[in-house]
Image 1: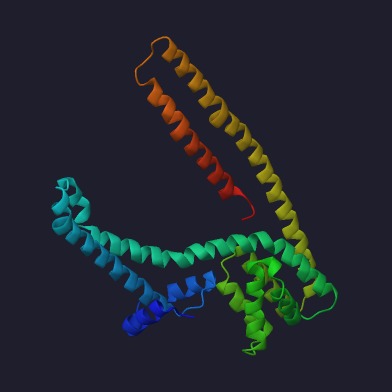
Image 2: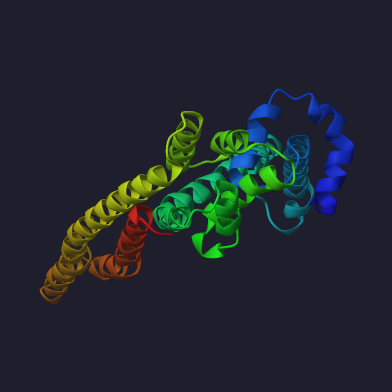
Length: 290
């Protein structure tokens, strides 16, 4: 569903965007990101954002030359930033817009990889009960607890039930559009099992066990890494700043450097927050769950 702004962009640039060489790339990125918007509409949206960025840069130039001098004389060094600002802001707005699908696809990939072992246990349990693959994906699509995996299952069941596509083609389409390599490998294995006449139930059970083993291994590795980070945190963020504060405090008592107070302020209000933020970001980026 397009917003009013996106609809306006599409009306203005839609025909030209449909001929863009980026259409196929954007289409794949939007599918992986699960963004329900036509690629030419999104390209139009990115072009318009680039134009808006250029307009913002022109406004900055006008303000710099005609408004700011009324109040004070702006430093000439700012010209190095102000003059190219239309081009810089246009490029920034365009590339940020084009990167949004890739960013969302990356978040979806991580969520799928995290939830997939548990979703496969659900699939294996359903297969053991003798339920058909189409019904398995239908039931999985009704379980939002499995995050992005249930959305992938909903697309597969949509292809089968609404578009009347056979199960092999539906799985192949899902494998092509998913951002997760693990889920892609699982679907490709299911396709091979079906086409070769293998036992799909045994395949689901084997993959569920394999992915659960891998998930336990990843959790164990993360806990070991977390232990190392905890030791580093104590050394870098607790012991080292405390040692520096004591050293500089003693130096100040015995007539140390005149800027000792500034150094202490930097340690307390700059070094410690940055160090804590760095450790928090490192742990967040390595965590197996979002």
